[in-house]
Image 1 (cartoon, rainbow over the protein chains, first blue to last red):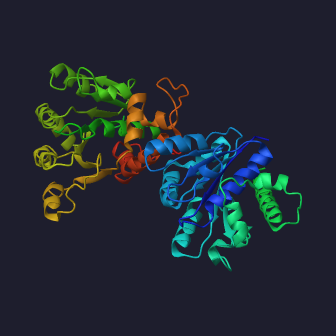
Image 2 (cartoon, rainbow over the protein chains, first blue to last red; image 1 turned 180 degrees about the horizontal axis):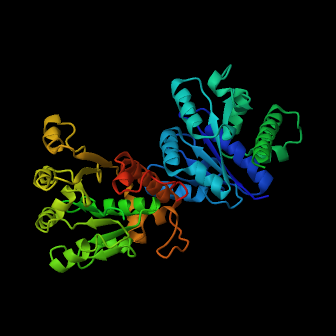
Image 3 (cartoon, each protein chain N blue to C red; image 1 turned 90 degrees about the vertical axis):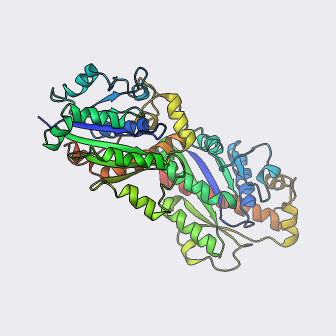
Length: 223
Length: 250
C-alpha cells in the first residue's frame, strides 16, 4: 500500500479554545508512536506550541507569500513524517483562503498527503461561520470536530455534531494548571507515573487512544 | 479552409500587461487545441518570444517586409489564428498601417476575423487611447481589457468618468484580468516558461521542474479566472473552433 503522510491542522477562528493543548497532545502522541513529528506553530497572539515542544516545532506564518511558500511547500511533501499545525485564530481565514486558492486538498491527495482538519468547536457565531466555510472546502471524512469540554460546556452546536467528533474531557483546575507548565510532557508523565489510576494518567491515555482511533479510521477510509 | 483570425494585443502605454495578456491567450489556445502563431513587435528582443519561442517570431511592424510576413501569409493554411503583441506606443500607428494596406476593409467585409485586445492601464492617459483607437474599430471585435496589475478601480467609483470612457465605443466588450500574486508572477518570469508549463511544474524543454507549490497554485487559480473571462466572451467561437475543449487535464 502506498505510504501517506498525515497533516493535522488544528484550528478555530476563536482564541483560547485549547488549540495549543490539542496540538501538544497530538504531537506528543505521534512522537511516541512514530518516533518523529514536525509541528508548525502559527500563533503570534496565543500560548505558543513552540514554548512547549521546541525540539519538534517550527514557527510559520501565512501573512505574506514567502511565509506561505515556506509552510505549504513543506506540507505538500509525502515524506512519511506526520505534521501538526497549530493554527492561530488570527490566521484561520487567511490559511483556508490560501488553501482553497492554491488547491491544497486536491494536490495533497495527488501526492499522497492526507490533510485532516481538527476544528475546535465553540458556540459563538465566528465558530459557526468558520465551520460552515470548512464544510464547503474540506471533505466530510477529514473534517473532525474537537469537542473540548472545557470550552463547550454542554451540547455541541448541531451543525458540528454530524461528522466525526473527538471529545476532550475537562480537567479539574489544579490539573489544568499542572499540565500548562512549559516543562510538562504528557508522555513523560505516562512513563514516570506508576499509578495508572490517577485522573491525569487516564485523561492522557484516553486522549491518546482517541487519536489512535482517529488515525486508524482515516487509514481504513483511504485503503 | 477556416477564416483567418488576427488578434492584436496592444496599448499605447507601456507596462500595462500587454505581453502577459498575449501569453494567456497563447496558453488558452494551446489548451483548446487551436493552432496559433504569434508575432512579437518588441524588435529586436521580444518578451513574448522568450516565453513562447516555438510559436513566436519577432517582427518590426513599421517595416513593409515584416508587414508582408504577417499579413501576406494569413491565407496560407494553418495555423489560422495569429496573435500580434504590439509594442507600447505602436497600437494606433499599427492600426493606421492596417487601414492603409486594406486589412481593416477585409475585416469589415468578413474575409478576416479581426479582434483587438486593448489593454488599459489605471490612468486617464490610458483611457484617452480608447477614443483614438475607436476610429479604427469598424469591422473589428473590440475588447477593452481592464488589467488589474495593481489595486486600481478604473474609476468605477466615479460613474460619469467611467461611462465617458468605457461606454464611448458601441459594441466594445469589457474584459477583466485579475491581479496575479507578485511573487508568482516573478517566479514565472524567472522560469521563462508559459503559464501552463509553470502550473504543470515543467521547465523550458518539458523537463520536471521544482517550482513552489504555493506559487503554482496561485498561477493556476489566476489562469483559470483569466480563461473563464475568455470563455465568457466566447473566444473559441470567435476563432471558429467551437466550444472550449476538455482542457481540465492540462
